[in-house]
Length: 491
Image (tube, rainbow, N blue to C red; front, side, top):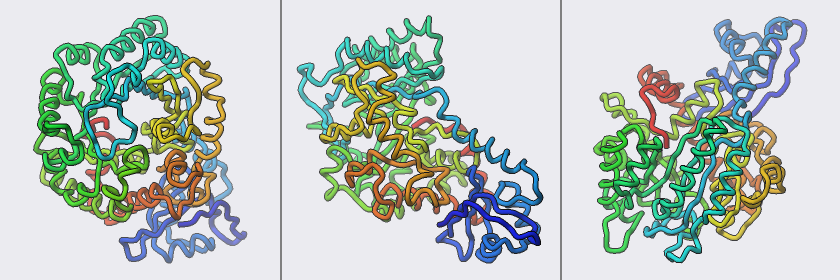
């Protein structure tokens, strides 16, 4: 990978160079993906790249493709530069309006013993690990301090349904205040679904909740990853899925799988389980370096290279099913493809630059701590308070100007970071300050040792490589995923 940030052609050359980056695709003989400063891309071969960087004449078709995405400029017009500025402004438009995702961690209590739990779960029912009414009310104040008109309120735990009364208080208070505020608010929750009641389901229906649950695959794998004392987690999860669909409908429920070393041995079985249960999307989520997952790394972890072998097998299975008329989307690929194939800002805060933490997300912990991301909260549970913005009792202005936000701002712009600045995929990716702090003690880290970087480089190579092969059906499927047709469930 490399970047050409400026090029000046001699007077006898037919074009000038504009900023661009490039990467050799590992699965092709000589194909190179070239990306513009605004994230548009085209493919050329190695010979064309040599001519391009030396400002030598190019074939008309190659020059036309490069000019169309503002990699070269023929003539002296300033229009290409203006187009780049407009496209870049569109791609970074997520910065308008401040944080739009507000996560309420209402409890740490959970009855599962998941091997990869990212936080320190609690089993005590003594109120110590519950969000109080006063903390919730202050967190709601901070929610409405945020300037955005479109806000998402997400409930997490632990198992948040164990604190349903607090959820109910928060939702009803937000809706009452919103009669004056006039915001557009969406409610979501991440839950095992094991504690559903008729009252809870009717509440979710009344307030149009979106629900996400965890399903790790077939029963043996799911139960091994997400054990319950003397009970079968998989059976209870399927029962919860059935109840949610009966009351709320299919479009209000999504699921994701967290991958352990055991999961990597069953790519096809995991995909087929989702199809069997009628899901139209699956989110293949790797382990994160936080909480119990970090301590269990030697037993259930794996390298980025091992993950990518699994992922490519799973993606091949998903593409095969789509060709057979069975629509199922790999949700993470759809997010990456949306950034690759459309000019619009990503809605996924974990892959933003500047980083989504703080700029796009606020997390209100059960104990009143405020963080810019769920990963920052997890880092604090491990004893590192570097990404704690402050307290729910602090004014919004103090939170957004805190030392932790300064750290996030300084380490969260991928285009300025070593190893990211010259990467061909920087437009579609985002830095990982919390993960870098957890693994290296530094918010920037070192890309040569970063599992986040290795994993995402491999994912982009996989997607760009399949597009470069030119199969029209694959491109059609990828375009449908990128543009949301057929509809992709939120994950």
